[in-house]
Amino acid sequence: MFEQIERVPGDAILGLIEAFKKDTNPQKVDLGVGVYRDSQGNTPIMRAVKEAEARLLKNETTKTYIGSHGAPAYGNVVLPMVLGENSPVLDAGRASATQSPGGTGALRLAADFIATQLPGKDIWVSDPTWPNHLGIFPAAGIKLHKYPYVDADNRLDFDGMLSALKQIPEGDVVLLHACCHNPTGFDLSQDQWKQVLEVVRERNLLPLVDFAYQGFGEGLDEDAYGVRLLAESLDEMIITSSCSKNFGIYCERTGCLIMVAKDNEQMENVRSQIAIVARENYSNPPAHGGSIVSEILSSDDLIPVWRDELTEMRDRINTLRRDFVEALKPYGLDQKYACIAEQRGMFSYTGLTPEQVDRLRDEFGIYMVRSGRANVAGFSHENLPYLAKAFAAVNS
Ligand code: PLP
Ligand code: TYF
Image (tube, rainbow, N blue to C red; front, side, top):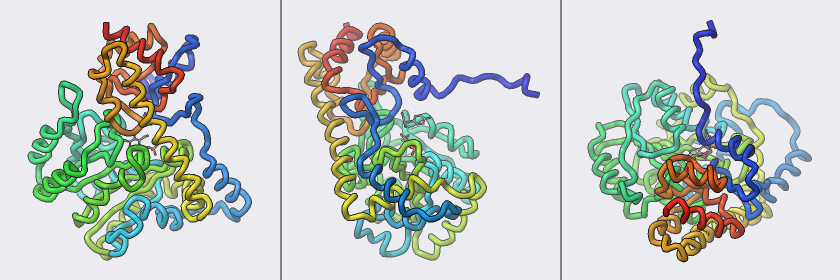
């Protein structure tokens, strides 16, 4: 039977990892996959995580199943991190947390819930969006459509987005990036979130907010502005949160599906269905990453250590954004790429064409996604002059 199976290309983003490894150029620069890098180009384990793991190793007494919703201790720390310490949504008992294998696992739980419990609802995603969004929802049987997000001049197309949202059939699901939009780095202002809220209300849409980079844009609370605004203003929403980036625990697969309902009664009904979806996928989530997060966020001595490290990562990225645009000044390209200093999070849609991206790879050993998306964390003060020179070369 297998003789009929066709081979398909692998994930374009993950494929860059292999291509980069093979390149022998000593000046090569990896701006591909979205993992944080320090000034040495490493993705180290955060100090708070190491310490939490040491404590877990010492104190853990069992490896038994943690249940389909995951560890209650994890949900208890993630909910206030996402929705706020004094959230009226939490006070009202309207939010349910389900630990998931990464933010991706939470997206798949959301997709299966929508497909089975809200049949007939389509989903609308930004154009462009994270490629896995395009796979996950159709894989669950949900029809996917796109709304515009970037204009031809590589700017946020908020007017285009808003007028498209106004056309979405009532009751459909709209996927929004909470912050640090992947792949563009263009985020909504507070005023724009308010306008989105109004359209969501008018059209009775169900927002699904993907929150994979909390703390990487402006700050833990600042990045949650849109999420909290929608949760506090609407009866229902879905949030998919990830701890992969802000705790640097990518491989531990640590995420959370948060379902917000009108009241505690409806939340419990929804929650009971989520348990089924989780069971049918993988039964129970992996425990270790969630244990790290709850250990840190419930230890008074580890919280500040973790917050400081997260701030350090965010500040490093935002400084490099500004310094890169400065480095382009001598080439007269600082205006053209000014957006890089304004975008937020790990990624920048640079506006480079696929041909320019290919030239950067072939002539300079600089690797990025062909859409022109660069992982800004791959910049360093050492490689900025080289990157600027290469950008100038492919622009001449
Ligand atoms: N959503 C977006 C937009 C992402 O960029 C990522 C990143 O990897 C995820 C979700 C999922 O993260 P993970 O499954 O690694 O927690
Ligand atoms: O967009 C990125 O680079 C990150 C990491 O299949 C990632 O979100 C990329 C592709 C993928 C899984 C994770």
